[in-house]
Length: 179
Image (cartoon, rainbow, N blue to C red; front, side):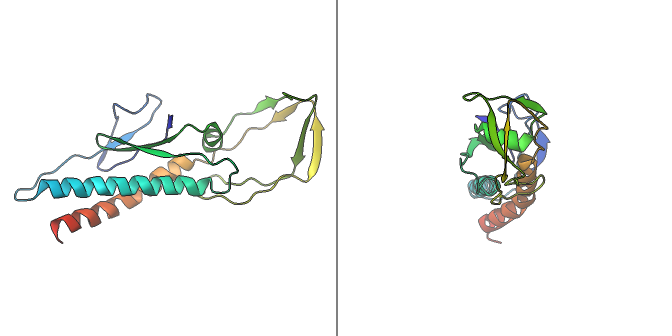
């Protein structure tokens, strides 16, 4: 499964479970005040982390909501957070973009496609729309595709989740402390 940028709280560190291709994880560094019920605090933090992971999955699902083949996103608990991932190749192409490439027919003598359509997603936007196939029919033996601009869903979801996590943590910890 391809791992997307994981998240949690506190400071950035390389996580031993993150792949070596630059995945980052965040580590929670516990501060243990005297006279507190640590089990309640630990449970509150775990619940907040789960809620943030669920929010991350919901955001990824918004990015692909109009796709005909829905990717499956999964949150995997690690020692101090969650890693959200998918093994969907198409998601990876759209998320990270593709370089210019040549397309040739595989099961026919020529390619046939519609030109002039609109994509279902935009770079820098969490969400998905209907999109459209091109209405001008094109036939070609070879296409020099210009590549696909990266949508950067992973960066967007990571940032949004990082923004909401402190709020969720404060609510859960406040509830555990009776504030």
